[in-house]
Amino acid sequence: MGYTYDQAMAAVPSGAHKVINFFDGLSGTIGKAASWLCVPMIAFLICEVFLRYGFNKPTVWANDLTVLCYGIMYMLASPYCLRDGGHVRTDFFYHTWSIRAKALSDLAHYILLFYPAHLVFLYVGWRYFSVSFAKFESSPESSWGMWIWPAKGAIVIYIILTMTQGFSEMLKCWYRFKTNVDLWHDCATDDVRDFTTAECKPEK
Image (cartoon, rainbow, N blue to C red; front, side, top):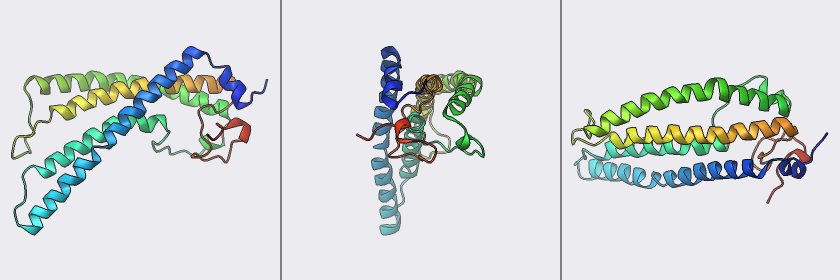
């Protein structure tokens, strides 16, 4: 049986919709909030350049804080990137496959590679953070003793958020496979060479 986009979306249970919308919204909200770390990051760099080259008085803190902001922003925005398919995908065959083949391949990768790896990352990352937080660890490379436990805490948050977003992506894969329609695909922004109008999400 063939589905139009609306019919296929209607075939997805309301509970699955709620889970997907919640985790997608969570990733989006945190990712967009984390993007504001660009503002202090750029301000620190400008301050360093201004003081270093304008007054010959380089700071000991600007570079450290810039790296800290960048690291936290990068990690907290990664689930948002996963949600919107922004991670680099290098493939030679995938883009020629059917919707069902792509969904099945993605689902297998989430189950066999994504989650086992992230469970290991979570175990290692939690130990990494807990030791750092217990002693309020500071960077040995920082001349003013900048705390680095917040960045290590961001690693744990990043892993948890990526795993929850991964669960949302698995649900999407399953219902793409069941309906043979590329649900949650936005034709206005993505490559649409292999999609028909009926298979794509209508523009708002």
